[in-house]
Image 1 (cartoon, rainbow, N blue to C red):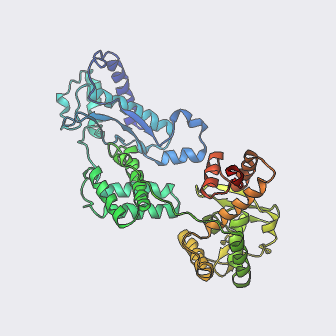
Image 2 (cartoon, rainbow, N blue to C red):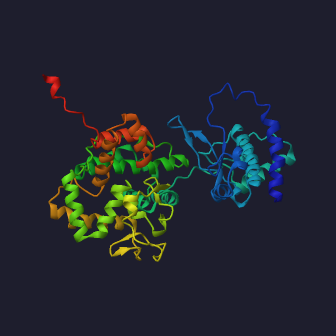
Image 3 (cartoon, helix red, strand yellow):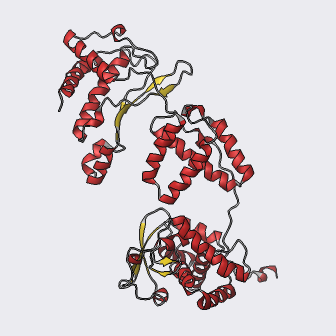
Length: 448
């Protein structure tokens, strides 16, 4: 550990002794909040319970001290720039935390003695009544590390974009990140990116969202609002903006486009036609129908996702979690031997199973959606309310009604929930209502 750190420890002892004698902090309206320590997004008290990976990720992030100071114009507490003071040079939790505790005490001492981060502070004007040797060391620390003596600086719009994109790239899937980036960049193109991020206010966001609504739909407008809220929430969480004002902008009601279930006759006709004209697309649809997968989940299947021996498959769900499901015999009988295929290739590709196909997820999904439109929708003259997703609705409805013949609604839903993968009974019940899975019996007798 460096000599610099030892000096800070000495100062900390003096600061602790001084601040214990302060008597007026509780009787005055504080013009600053007590400095706090940020430790890489983890609870430092739970450090020993973290995995090696979690500890490594926490130490890869910046650790710092954050606090607020009352704005003389607005009278409100405003977040100040993070105080790092070189702490991230240290590579262990112990060194960083002890270092920041010392710097925190030093910063609190300066604030108590009249430090104002909005002004140029001459340390000689502050009431630093310490013993001479400690005073000299203390002033040297402040000058060397500029602990809270710089004027607050603000990120430009471009700097804020770069900062958020860097974080989101690590936390979102490739498709979600690309959608997020495109929407935020479209919004940011309306501004001079060299201006401070604070130049964007609620009015500017509202005007942008209104323009999206006029030229698109309420659903599209809401999607842009969601991503903008996520953008500003990340800035708020990292003390770059005071608050996420987008949260206060209302979500508009929008009419969702429903995928209708197919009739029994439609289902038979489509399957028979595909058996003769596109067996690959038929197998793709049977994964949706018999395994109740979403089309995007079928697109994510790799050859190695299928375990024919154990009759199981592994998929990434819409929340990007890995989930295991059984493969029912009715689908298992349709599958050929996959052992000779490249296990790392996608199961479904345009020209066959397990072939090389290097494209992004959106393109994989679009490929089979367009194929279904060309082969089925155009041939059978089906409207926009019918799609690949409709097969999932159709077969869940069929299964639900068959189970209901000799089981109560609760028993039926309990069995169904385990098959479809819905995480809660409420989610399943809402889904069944949306697809009109349960219809009442004939009630004609009630009118007689």
